[in-house]
Image (cartoon, rainbow over all chains, first blue to last red; front, side):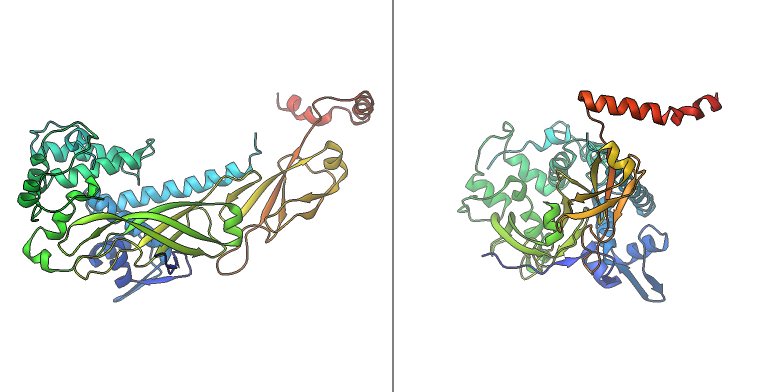
Length: 105
Length: 312
């Protein structure tokens, strides 16, 4: 039977706790904190034991988990891979914006 | 079910060592991993490689796989009752109907060890790409997805079952938006929680609009005299056509902004719509038109390229 699903938007308006991020990403708390401290996973707030993220970052953390498991990357490799992927994302968005300016053939 | 040759997928001999299998997997995974690869069919290729490696890297699963014998890729077959008794812990009565070859060895994870057999296992998360139209992004839409997911019976045996999911997407989804549907992924085992379903939204190409984030761009063809003299023209927007005042002296490529006429944002407000001016010159001129253009030429001169000479 088809039932209506609850739909959570993974956008900048939803705040995710460290515990929730651990549950949905598959990374351990230590891995998440290490990537967050290194800047590979952006945080909203990191103060003592409190660490929160924007829900947009869930996909980044899940990517990190996939890369860890499927390419067997260590934390240093993960940090570099995530930063490069973010640069690719920014460049692809810029290309899409510039393409939108071009007239259709 | 259809036989899959895992050794061929990894490009190794059947007698390959664990180290050779790992080396080959790593080489192929780096090439085809969908998070980093732009190879065509990378996702499907990586799925084959990962499925093969998950089985061949585990000695218990590899032994069970080898016991199925060597068969041609894609051959229809059914594991024997002996195979089920020896390798899947069953009673030899399982029909293997609706079982996907990819799922055949996954239950080893669910039943493999004594501790796991009595423990809970969470269901698998799934990510599904979904394309919606710009109209759907503007108005919101209800997605009715017909998915197929593995489901475990009480003995940990797995089979594929239809998994319909209905999800209401409010207005405001854009390219790259991700949505999480908690509990709509794979079923948990032994009381474990169900996995989640993630939807990766992308927008279908549109005959008029090009979307970037919440902003939309549309080509605005203008006749030369409209661009030179100014005009009021009708421009389509997802909410309906609006009149746009084109200023006199508009050039090709200039963006004319219609604030708040783009795609809505989920929490209120909307992006902008930009009409990109394109001055369209008639491909053929009537006699009268040619006469008027000749007059215009005489009146305007050719000062547009003066800077070419200055720069020489």
